[in-house]
Length: 394
Image (cartoon, rainbow, N blue to C red; front, side, top):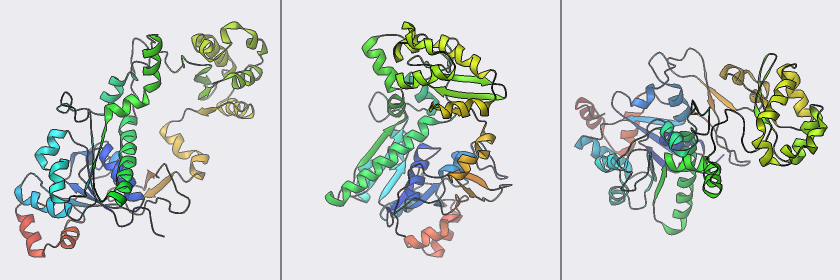
């Protein structure tokens, strides 16, 4: 079956998550993706290690369906190899500060001199504005500066998400922007630069709180897991674990009041709409907490489901992997990798297509696994490849 991006070649100079996962998504839909590794292996390979040789969990998730070529792009010989590869490419992915892009010759202007219709998908911490381009940052910095961390945890203990939501959301935005640029190029014949920043992504995720503050000036403080905007919406302890329940809107509140046997709450002016229920959410959470305290997690969730109230278990990672529904959904592609003690659950692409679905067909590459193969395809002789290797360029 032909895939959407079949025939598109992507050079992935990305590191960590935002760039590499963008390229992985493109590969899932059929693009040929070449990961450009540092000689010896790029640093993002080794975060949260899970293999005997140190490859990390996020590396495995973000680098499926790729081939790997090692290259020292700082050296003139390595720069020439990069240029020859760029001439064969449709897209370059690079999540680096703008100054680093310029220093490596991966800025859009330089790329256009090599391949006029190239598309550059460039993500960075703060974007290319003169006041921000020099700054570096990771996912947590974006979370913190967006207001999201302030609104999480408690006033005495701001809390960031321990999973890199901003990194992955940035990667998704980069992939969407790249697809748009490829679509537009079909009629214009021209490339362009796709720019996404961690901060802009984080601001998007936190946009509701920012709009509310700008318009109403409430200066909200953190309320833990309890929503200040509606209720009850919180995390509750059962006899054998934790659940989340979220009641939003009058129909849900009416069903919830009946569920816990408190229909008189419908006539209480403190709970007349979502805003007031959020303001008095502590009272509602206490009532829901008391209801949950005498039930098992399974019993509480079954009752919520019967009442058509959104709820779910608070899982550990192990429980997530063992959940029958998640298994039935086919959420994972289980891949072996050299040095893994068992197959790893690589999460499938979040968006599927009915006729031309994405697929994970190959494990992430080892360091430089396809260097010779790619260079031969690019026109290098084996003697030239051996010479580059002796120089330490590959």
